[in-house]
Image 1 (cartoon, rainbow, N blue to C red):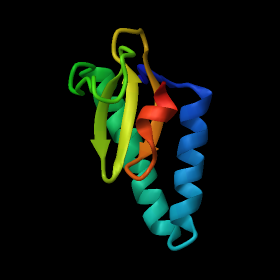
Image 2: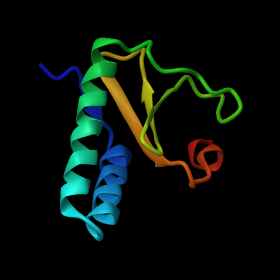
Image 3: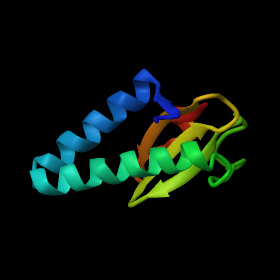
Image 4: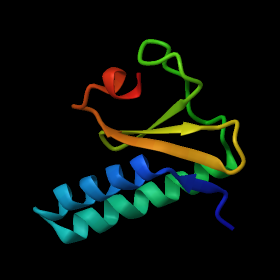
Length: 97
């Protein structure tokens, strides 16, 4: 049973990540996408696993790393809401505020 939901921005982030990686390797893109899905389910089962980053945002979101990306999510919702999936090179602070 899936206990998480991807908001439209997170869906768009995943699509961009998939397409970016797929330009080099479809297999790698599928592997990374699969790992994201595993982590989303893990966070749904254990929503307090992530951590807050007061240095990046004052919003009540938690962060969980996956490869060089950050899964940004709301743990206090039911289901857990995945709000963004951001790359390490992106300006996370600007995007979230």
